Image (cartoon, one colour):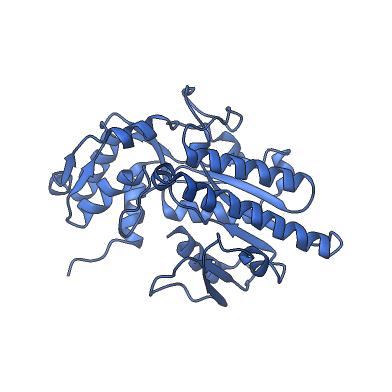
Amino acid sequence: MIGQKLLARLVRDGIDGAKVQITAHDIAFPDNAVPVDRQIIGSVTEPGVMERLVADDPEYVFHLAAIVSGEAEADFDKGWQTNMFPCWSLLQALRARHEATGGSYRPRLVFTSSIAVFGAPFEDEISDTFLTAPLTSYGAQKVICEQMISDFSRKGFIDGVAIRLPSICVRPGKANRAAAGFFSGIIREPLNGVQAVLPVPDTVVHTHASPRSAVGFLCHAATLDTDRLNGRRAINMPGVACTVAEQIEALRDAAGEQAVALIRREDDPAVAHIVDNWPTRFNAARAHALGFRAETEFREIIQTYIEEDLKPAQ
């Protein structure tokens, strides 16, 4: 979903205002996929795929491919095979191109990491320098990718940036297996007249940003002066920290009591356990100083979904 929205932005605006040729690779593409120069269907787990994708020395590489948190926790082997090893293969392929050009090729790699790299016990606000000690397989896979990107950048093979996304909300389309999927579901489903399940107490606090903001993070990271990072190439992205109850109040403000009435509370200890092992609030001062921007109120996030993705009633 974020990949398609990113492609739409790149087709419309290019990078730094310059038109770019785009190759998109994914396990599948929707019928209404954004038209790009080259579209390749396949899995990042396939042998040799990364070498083929970077053979023409792309200047910018956006690596978003992953399976989500709940699925990575439920299927241990699939999580590592999808979330960690392909990142290593991509880095090695880019290193090979760097060395084949005598060191002149050094692409910008933008990697979508996650707040799941952190683990309890948490401080009130998590800064970029807080200990990365994940308590889920997904978080472990993401933090290892961060470290690999940092080391390959230190060696000069690539120029990498890892952006730690908060929960992206409201996600359009069908629910996926992300443990945080309900944060979107309790807004998206009621706005579409469908019942939603809330599996955790409404006192749970989480940080969110819209898909529009996520695309903005990716595009900004592509042109960021990485000398300003001082070697710390993983950055906590900004977002809106709020309770589930505050999310629901924002929904009531946007769509009325009839929408809120479609939320059914149904505790799920497995989901609650995963969410409890994530941080809640972030100090995004470093990201803001570097020029990253997000919404400041959850109502703005709902409005973004209404404007971009809510299908009109038939």
